[in-house]
Image (cartoon, rainbow, N blue to C red):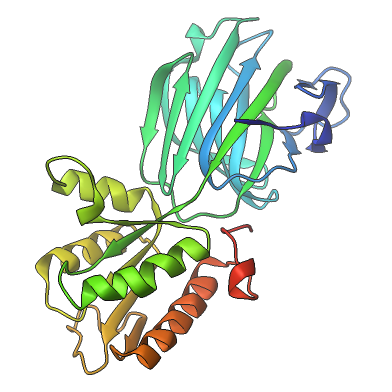
Length: 315
């Protein structure tokens, strides 16, 4: 885990003060700004784990103290934390200073004033797991597509005081789910082209046959796709397992890139989707790599440039 320097916080709305580099205080007292409170942090986070302490010195029905994540400035973000809409623990989607509740747990009457709550949040693709004091209170796997990687602090209007910090994060490589037939020549295409390129641009590639254990059931496949940032599917063969995985990806509105050997006639249902056709030869593999690299840069908003300089999504 790496500590986040809260002293570099950038207040946008509300009264925020830095008690130390490890603790930030929001206060509505003597504040000329009657809006919700919002402050942005300089440290980004895509997939990974975030931990922090949050305290509401005066917890009541109008209280709310949240960590914002997957943010694009104040334009769009998600928020998770204490209080909100009479819930004890809440996950919400934010647009500017407007929050829309996605889900909540418990009743706000159970929050204790002056108690320090330890918040832990795990992010994997569209899944977020929120734990408070070591107990999982929210496990939500339907986050819309990523909006960004920004972090921040949010306090409901009516919150008299809120304390945040210290805050630490464990940044992880985002996941890429690879759907394809497990036979030659596709294994060779995966081993020599797809896997190294996906790793090169900063993602963790996963193919179902690489999972440890007795096997992957449908619920596990769904979970793996949910926790991925992108799905890459080789659809040259009419493989029902691959088609199922592509269907799950489309149902989740997951960014998806299709690959197929040149001459493949795609089924009607996936015909209109983005597909890279390639020749199974050394020159063809080189063109496949370039086409896949270009598609991922465009689809995910990756930083363009030389292959060695391409890193994980940073919006």
